[in-house]
Length: 228
Ligand code: NI
Ligand code: MN
Image (tube, rainbow, N blue to C red):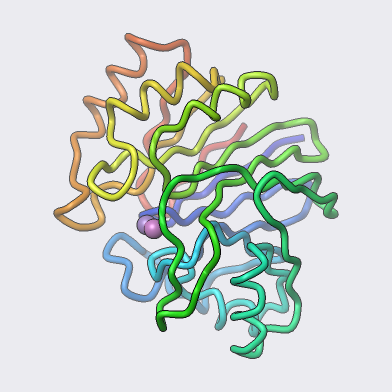
């Protein structure tokens, strides 16, 4: 059984596994890299890493249209409820839960999480997904390099989706250190190239990844997919 990962640009992904569609940080409206619009996005579950506008994105509209269950931190869950989203599962850092697609655990991220209207968005997070078909995925969210990532090496990560764009998050140097800590089989870089602040040479990052680590680095453009 396969896992299909589709990139929507910036930090937005769709993961299809066992007939379940997970949409991560759905940012279409205002995303310069997006090639589809929010009303074309499908979701059974929406995973939200933190409160910043480039991650919350179109969550409210997509959740209302699709009836997807939104998985996010406790503070953002309250805010989404106020926006009229009814199906929400709050988690918080270090905690996980069993969902129809598998286990989802919130991991540490060092970043901010203020919501677009200035509301408090709790702490930012990443996600560790243990899918029912046996694949393990780590999505870093927006974060600095943290030595806590070393714990992920115990998890047998098949795919790590890592922010690499520098300026607001890990840049290429720190993302390479993260790969050495996590020891994933494969890596997809994200959170780069959306705006001038986070323009990096991602082909150079890929080459350095292949030289310095055992992980295979996969570069996706918007609406391209990779199958695990
Ligand atoms: Ni952010
Ligand atoms: Mn961001």
